[in-house]
Amino acid sequence: IIRKKTFAEVQTERLEQAERTILIKCPSKLNENKLLQYLSSHGNIQSHFLFENHGIHALIEFSEKNSIASLQDAIGIPSAVERHVVPFKSRLFTFMLKNPVSQAAEGTPVHLSPQSHIPVKDLIQKLCHADSISSQMYILLNEYQLTEENIRLRFLACSLVRDFARAYFPDSVVRPFGSSVNTFGKLGCDVDMFLDFHDTQKSATKMKKGPFEMEYQMKRLPSERLANQKILSVIGDCLDNFGPGCVSVQKILNARCPLVKFSHQPTGFQCDLSVSNSIAIKSSELLYIYGSLDSRVRALVFSVRCWARIHGLTNSAPGAWITNFSLTMMVMFFLQKRSPPIIPTLDQLKVLADDKDMHVIGGYDCSFVSDLSKIKPTENTETLDVLLGEFFEYFGNFDFRKNSINLRKGKEVNKPESSPLYIWNPFEQDLNISKNVNQPQLEKFVAMARETAWILQKEDKTQRMINKEPWGLAVLLIPFGKSNHSKMKNKVKGIGSETIRSLLESLKLNSASSLQKAVEK
Ligand code: CTP
Ligand code: MG
Image 1 (tube, helix red, strand yellow):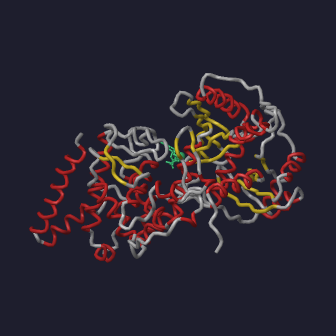
Image 2: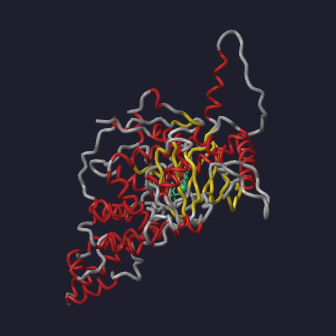
Image 3: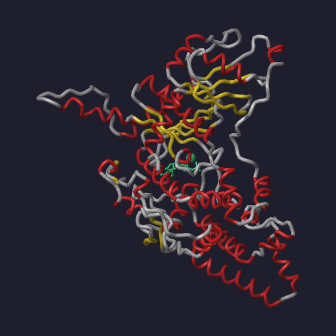
């Protein structure tokens, strides 16, 4: 058996691959082979794909990095007739036909790799053809998860930003973190990236041999935060002024974690750039491990997040809503609480850590095992059909007033303070990752979870399939007011059994009053 790669190995490989990669805007009528032929005079092309993003683009991976230098040497600079050009030579190019009319005729149909997911209404259609909720959840996962091509494009975006950072800090690296790399990314999600000077810090010990020592003279500032703000400010200006296709550059330097937001048009990504966020990369790695351990983990997360988005529990705008990151952590906690557990607690992962896995960052213990093969597979065999219902049941009845969610221990812990929803940051133990969530948003989540659990329990799947109505997961992805769920209640009425109807109603009433109790402060 081939050993599964560690998170760090995958990251290093993909960053190196991105450095050998270029992006070319192409004419709409294109002969793919001729493009490849044209480029291959500069070196062997390892892989490529085409995609649509305000016109056709080609991502080209060369086998050797120096092929790019050879190409850059050979190609022209746009004429400065109308507007002056900034002479920064990036790895973004435009491919043109010298004789568009006759050359366009040579164009052949090209395969375009999709970079966005299908609309929800098409997804719901697809789900109705599945044979179980479990297979519906895997269909959703397959439609929404990042593709190989999209991941490459994300690493390329980071690598292009690195080209700017390097102008000042030759050893710096720009690494993606968050949902681009934690296995829970959905097509269309933003690219979180950070500037890493780690190598610079390592070399601090180099000159310690012998009776002498030498070190760099470096500018000193009163705090790391101030240094980060200055660095981000300059790189932000660079992107804004010289970055081809970098638009809407926004410096948000006063945030808890200072960042620069921008839209990268050539790749089509919304990007958030911050500085050496080593703890955030550790939490990305932790989620990567959880997502890789068992196929049910990602399937459940994607379904829950899609459900939350459709019912307005999450929102792409910042605010008091639950974030995807918090929801993902809640699913992880739920999976730790199954019996037997589906994923281990962070403390258990720490026990499995070896010497090279030991990391203390900013005084916080971030040690846990990196080798996936050291983690024993779960003995839990529950189906996703069961897990989905149980997830809503569990959080519909969770005592949020009293308890917090702690992934390190895999146990509910008394809340250390009165935030409505308290999820411990697994590493920075004094931070609540869902501090932004207010009481009304939490109540909405709990109410929706209860209603959903109730729908899943009461639904007659076979009948709905016969009636060609949406069923299972599909029902949960239609806003409840508009769904056939109200029809379903009418059907119950239609059976004529007043007893069953009132029983169901009272169940709902009961849950409504205990809901009130559960979320009251
Ligand atoms: N993060 C954190 N604490 C928070 C918010 C974010 O530690 N309160 C870190 C997490 O590592 C997270 C990353 O910052 O993965 C990026 O945050 P964000 O973009 O909000 O979340 P993603 O996981 O990337 O999810 P999404 O797809 O919604 O962007
Ligand atoms: Mg993100």
